Structure formats: C-alpha cells, structure tokens
Length: 69
Image (tube, rainbow, N blue to C red; front, top):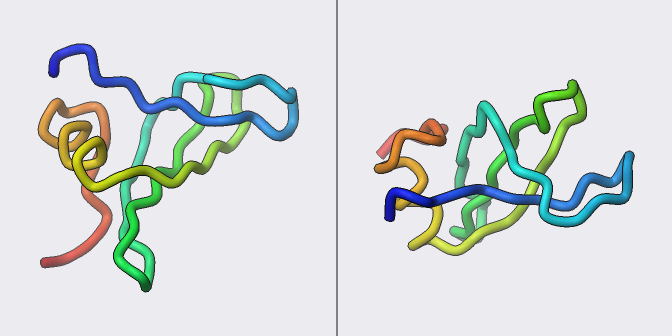
C-alpha cells in the first residue's frame, strides 16, 4: 500500500477529496480512528476513517500515531 493517501472534505473551501498533510491519527472514545491535519495551505482538516486504513497510513509513514498503547 505505497499509494496510501488520507483525504477529507474541506469545509472552508467546500472541496471534496482534499489530500491531508501532517496528519495525526487518534482514537475516539468509541474506538474509531480520526485523522487531523492540514491541506498545505493552512486550512485544518479532520476526517473519520476505518482501522485498516488508519494503521496502513501510520505504517506507510504519512501519518503519526497520536495515542498510547
């Protein structure tokens, strides 16, 4: 999975599928995964994602792990 990308909806510019940079993935209280980052232009992005994609993004090095085991 070398082509893993995290994308989100940009509320400010109303664009879909915006690539996320400097992502930090955290776990919610119910066990879901949430990625927070920016779009490279200073706009903040947040998206929910499945466990498989979240762990693949961490393994690929495009996101940082934001929780303790």
